[in-house]
Image (cartoon, rainbow, N blue to C red; front, side, top):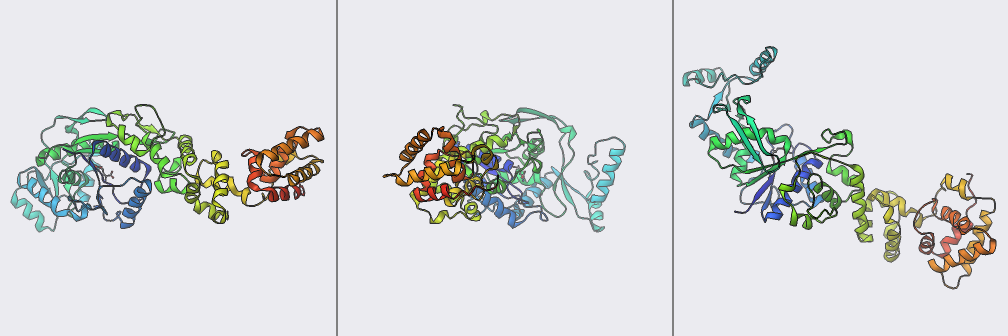
Length: 481
Ligand code: GLU
């Protein structure tokens, strides 16, 4: 039987990196096992769910390249893939449970339930449902209905037991069902409660493996009781540890970017984010860290997923991104950074592609996110607006402008202009003037680029070209340091 897995978000916001992590593990598992990955929306919270959020989640998944085989927007034989379009299925399952006595109608109002919970808390008892409507007679039910009350449906809990959840990641986890109460499965407005909807859907969609965040491990005993009551086969469960911030609390806004969109807006590329997320809780058997999706999918194994929570590390994420930027074809890198380059006014679109490629190759070792590209290439397009003050203090002497003008003379008289001939000219000049080459090289870099560090100076000179280099060398007019 081929595997079927799913991601079932509630469309109440954007895609969080934790969600992307869950999707990735589902998708890697599906690809590894030759199965299918389904996207389904749990949109029964009508006040918080929105179409805009569905679009945002789908767009973020597409941006990441994490595509679903079946589900909203992709179709499939098990649809519809939105819970609000599947109400008859829940109603049928609920009616069956009710008829078999596995569930019962509860007429308690939210206010009554709350005041009883409060009483229980005051008395130091766990605030569980007290079973008041468990055994109402038909006459009692009609009387309550006649008062205008509407019924929710509750599961009639079987006698307490030690229920063991077999989890591929957590191992066997034991729960005492005595701690549960007769929980609501269909709310009084007719919508399924989460635990009920998910069990009906996972069964109807023939889901074989439920791979989701470990915040749902504690819901699993309830779901297992529902599978049993409905006479359904259990899927295999795998709860993936959540991602923590550096302070070991659940990754949240406090730690910086948490939505996938924010990572995009901060100049991370999707391949790097996907690769980084894969390593949160999983590792490749051969220990390699830079892996394509296909490479990961070849070796992915839920049994290699750690059950201890992974900590998000911004430095590692940034390092990973830099690795990917380095491997991109330079013009592709520019395309991806287009919005930042344009916003910074860098006229890269008019540049000669061969020259632009060389410029990007010269600087990209220093570029960690796409947002850093404009600043890294800026001085190739226009003279620096200002010079690094510390560089001015260290490298500019009284004789420096004359020295730079002499360097410009040498460059102008070169029969052939290249990085090599420029370097030879500099060395010859230094020797003749009896100064260290650094005394010409450092100020040259400073006036050409505005900075004290960067790619090989003679490469910069070659890329700027003879005319532009000489213009900048002569135009220093030494701004006040
Ligand atoms: N809607 C639930 C969530 O977003 C789905 C949980 C599940 O996968 O069972 O957390």
